[in-house]
Structures are given as C-alpha cells and as structure tokens.
Length: 90
Image (cartoon, rainbow, N blue to C red; front, side, top):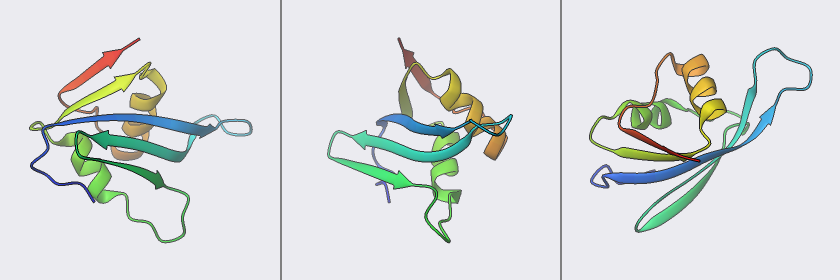
C-alpha cells in the first residue's frame, strides 16, 4: 500500500455518512506522499483497514490533514487512536 520509507503523507477523509447514525460511517480516504497517491474505498467488501490504522499510529510518518476534526474523530472511533505526528491546516 504505502512505502513505509515515506516520512510525509497528506490525507483527507472525503466522505462521511452521518444522516441516520450518531457516529459517522467512514466511506472514502484520499492520501498522497511525494511519489504517489491513493484512494481507499473503505466500504469495499472484505477490505482490511489494519495497514491504514498502523500508518495513522506510526510516529515516523508526518500526517498532514486539512480541517481534520471529523477525520481525527472517525479514526479515533474506529481504531482507538489519535494520529501521531499530525499537522492540521485550516
């Protein structure tokens, strides 16, 4: 998925379904590093989000978010962690 030698990624959680639930439902994640970019369809059947959550907890990778309140909220709800080494731009 992501070369762990990258030390900087930018990400955005684009889609939330929150119409009929108290907690948002994660739908789509976009992320990029200097050499590549990905779109992660987390609603795909059988997808394993473990590598994504490991990346969020990896202190050796700086994560850049934009307006991250809901992004951090849903990562915390699903994985029980707040992304380490995060920069949040508004």
